[in-house]
Amino acid sequence: MPSPLIILGIVIVVVVVLVIAAFSIRAQRRNELEDRLGRYSEVNFLDLPQDKEEDKPKKKEESALAERLDKVIAGQDFAKSIKQQLSRADLKLTVSEYLALHVVTTIGVAALMFLIIAPGQIVWLIIGGGIGAFLPRIIVAQKQASRLKKFEQQLPDLLGLWVNSLRSGYSNMQSLEAIAREAPPPASGEIRRVVQEVQLGIPQEDAFDHLLERMPSDDLDLIVTAINVQREVGGNLAEILETIGHTIRERIKLKGEIAVLTAQGRITGWLISGLPIVLGLFLMLINPGYMGRLVENRNCGWPMIGIGLGMIGMGAAAIQKIVDIEL
Image (cartoon, rainbow, N blue to C red):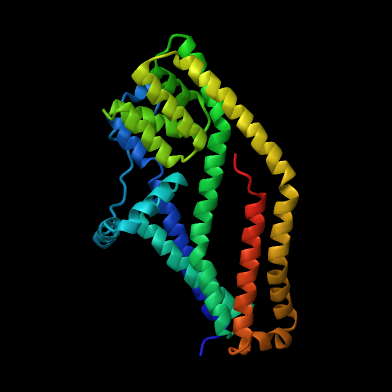
């Protein structure tokens, strides 16, 4: 019978191969949407690269099974929410690849727990599977939050460039094109997509609504609302955007001050919540016989673990709710 180390090695190799394959497919799709839009838009104004037919690399055709699986999953209701989350996180993955990544991480983390951390213990296999199942979702949520935060921090500078372009004689679309060239990512990519959608014939209001769906920001909602109102009733758009930019700068400054004042509370909540879990894992590693009784006793030990984790989760949620001050 093969040893656990051999089994673990095989599992790790399979997981690594699948992860590398997923990232390779993601790299091939990185700018596929922008390239398609660029074929039908005035890409020379945006300084977008135009690939010649003879210079384009031949992309590998996906298998018929993979295409069929993508079509079947894409038709489901839950696929729309997953697509939206992946779009907000700027991950070039299909829904089927995202779900396959869940399977890979579930099997990989469960095997790691069962064969290395706690050999032969079913409860750790279940815990590892649960952690692995939620790991891709946590990564996507963190990447989405980081990208949205970076976009919101770029909004004041973006509005400043927009106002200067309007006052120098540019039209609204020409100002957006200038922002797409000069602004750093992710703002440049999102504004470039708005410009390309408008050039393809999509109404400007719908293009900004699509931007708001990809970047669900209250500050951006204020900007889009002001632009739509100005298009209907008229007015000086430069002055409107300048006022909004000043308001957004003050909001960002106030958010920073609140974050500094509540930093101690947030860190305290993380330490109090993580300390029992880390201490329990540490005791399990150095003295399995002592902590093993809690895990092996299903009648008393498992309910105690469940109640303890539930109370830790409720306490962490309560602390984060207290220090989360909305403006």
